[in-house]
Amino acid sequence: MDHAIKDIEKIEFEQPGLLKRVLKTAVINPFANYMPSGMLKALLRHGNSELAAANWKDPGGWRSMVISYEGNPEKFADRLLVNGGTVPMALRNRRRLGAHLLAELIDSSKSNPVHALCLGAGPGRIIIDAMSKAKSDCHATLVDLNSDAFEYGKKIASEANLADKVRFIQADVRDIDSLLEDPPDVVKMIGICEYLTDDQIVEIVTATAKVMPAGAAIVFNSISKAHGTDRFFRRVFGLNMNHRSPAQLQALIGQAGFGDFNATAEPLGVYHVVVGRKTDA
Image (cartoon, rainbow, N blue to C red; front, top):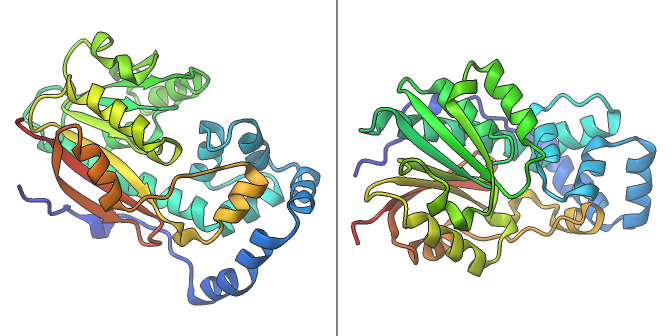
């Protein structure tokens, strides 16, 4: 299969300049990682940081993701975190790359309409971006254990004129075989593997593989410690992410009958977005 990604050079990725990279490595990251966590938390509370509050309530949850994705917070503390931090910048790159790849998969599918299934979907920002970019007709089923993000998701779907194309379901994704009206052509699980154990990943993709036809695509991401602030996220935000290489994730997901993997890095090297295919077996 040809894995060439079309028009990737047209994606408007974010990249820091040389001076900013040097400052982050020599000054900002050591300060964030080793300054007493209590002092950092106090500074963020004093600055009314919405990003910090969202992570303290639900580490890595959809609210903090939206703040990072939008990139235009009101509070000064959040502007520093969102516009100066490597992870928020890499998240926005992942959003652009993921939407581009998903739109390409939708347009290359032989189904009409294409059915996209999103696991741990939150509000569905990336799939809504992808459906807006795609030329082919597509409808999406978005599944999440928590329904808190669904109202926001329905709002952005309506703004994109896709309200009748998305269906939100509160459920355990491992019960997916009883939830779908038709098999998925594309499965998206971007943004969830870093919060799952190896066993949870294998269990989820095994259940998902049962409802996927041979050749259907699965899209997921890896995360590396290239962002340089894992200690900050663990101590200050309570955010414990599982860092895996693309090869490690491919080995896990391959256990459920997937192969033909292709990984593409966003420019900062924090995230790889990986596309795999359900095998015939």
